[in-house]
Length: 513
Length: 67
Image (cartoon, rainbow over all chains, first blue to last red; front, top):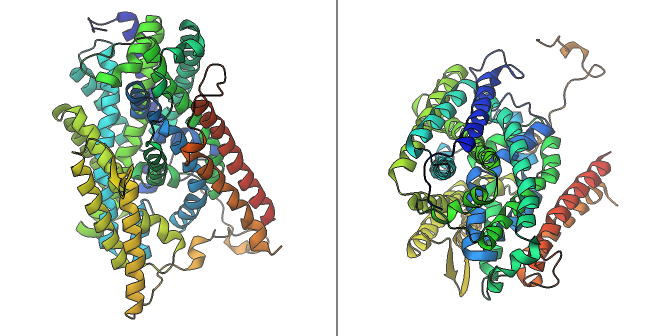
């Protein structure tokens, strides 16, 4: 569909919703107000007080990003069933979350960690390994933020708005409310955003098949070979699902969402209820098939990524299309805000405090993080405006491969006590190195590569090599006389018992109100 | 059963989604369809619900073993 001018009824409903949500972002500091936001626990983690429901909204908005909602159906539209790997991916991730994240949350809460690198630093007594993990996180996050802005661009383009000018306005709104409100803003906006997204998807999944004559008719128009995996695609499908699942909770923005929650129970419950969003994502993926059946013509600027916005524009009344576009654009604000906060936390803690100003105090730490959050977003904006979108997409793909290479330092370290620091560093080098070589052999365009005759997800192959080096290297170090020293003891991973009236009456102080 | 085992055996259930989703050969076909939706698709949607139920079950079973 050629984009000819602004469709005003779409635009007005979009503008009203977007402005309303921005207002919420600005008043967010008043929600469960802290005495001061001049502390990373407050600005960067919302006070570590989010309960089950708020965490569900926050992580839902954080993990299932606007870009995901655009890219997954686009992949299904272009390549068929293989694009559905997002479903097994977002199912098997939750047993992993259940096993890993409560333990990580507990030690983070006990020891005051704000980032995964804080944990790595103390666990291995190595600022350097912590720095490697922090830089990996920053590098993987930058293109991801840029792609959220790309998600906004796609819908702005579909509405016929001047994309660059409108994007800069959206960006300013995002930057200012994040700076002022910290993590409370995306947490509060996530609630509104979810309501909008659920409405759009439920309407779409009922209205569009009804309009297209039911699922029988839809799939009758989709080529049969696109409805299942091609022969030989099984390994790619399974390894993409598993590798992505292992990598997801290593991302800094996801760590931030988890650390902001109130208790281990909050995380365990969320491992059981977050799959509701996986179901939603699956439904959105099906829109890719519906776009095929509706013979949607994606616009030239955004290619297949405009498949779903074009489908909405073609089939929905204008006002509801505007509503749907607002849902996508607002859906981009939440993860973009959390990602920039997470990147800022990494910079403030693991680069500024650990390397530049060790005597920094909490207030200065928070100020540095707030400024870093602005710089990160400016960087992402320049990135998406100056670099062709396909390159940003490829970069984000590579970011996933690199992110997974921090698995031994963070996840293995939680349960395996005999890891050697230098072996973990060597594993990281091998994983990043080999992963990047494989990506280069695919010209950074595809995330799978042929290894030992199997076409598999590069990240997974690289992390297997990584873990082999870590285990072998630790064994070698042991044989050479090295013995593990523990800076953290088993009790550091256990809940700290709160003093109760029976046991310890003297410690009961009136709570500050 | 010793307490550690009573608390930890439910963790084995968490392996189920991995087995039934990471071997696509199990479900990579069109028939039987459900409301016109290929088996490949509705099987995976069914596992979204099953996976969630399993995780919740494990949470409750371990919670109970702790008391």
